[in-house]
Image 1 (spheres, rainbow, N blue to C red):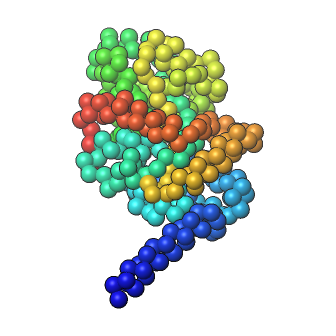
Image 2 (image 1 turned 60 degrees about the vertical axis):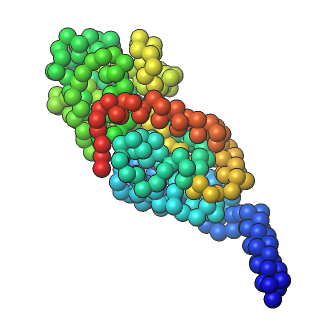
Length: 324
């Protein structure tokens, strides 16, 4: 009886293993869900829909967008962290839920570094530091000097507590030993409106919000936050070119999978999205939203996330900001 019981268990285990191998070999055999932890029309939603259309064609299965909004992106991101790693659920998330919130929240319901698996850094957009065009401030150096000469008289707007548009400025303040009061808003258009109305003196927010006002002559772009100049603002220097080193950040969006997702499936999705990001029509659509495709390997994304944590963790702690 013991022999039969043991044989039965071995047989069941072997059958389950064969079933798993068959499932991976025949992946995908049903629709794939791509969770977006932000609302329709947001940057992650836009890039998710551009990618999903092409990915569905290449994989031969529908890729369904699931906007699961809440808790600054934590709700949707956390749901995927707890999902089955069967290759049918992915998330396209951002700086906050994937890195910053591990420091901003005392108790995060998931660990993005252990419960999620990097797939690919899909794309991003630079933050643009800008002022109203009639301020007499023409360069980033002018802004820094003004902040130093008039301590306590400068405010900056952001898209919310713990957002890159706040933390990027906090990093700038650390590197330049300056002070400015943070005034959070719920969206980049409102953050820009605060600058235009004179409620704050400057903002460093995504290019998509700044460029229309720069083109209209209402705002002046002082610097971009990325390591290289933005193709959308080729005449605007980087922070380093403006004379301030060690201040590089980008509003990025990455595709992640549940941590137990098989390597061959993750590699396949990585390869397919890399190919999609290289397509001329995809680039054109992304450029139309002031976003740039990035791509790369899974390991590059993991290293990138760890570097983001190393740089921004002390900045977040210095602010004393917590969300929960």
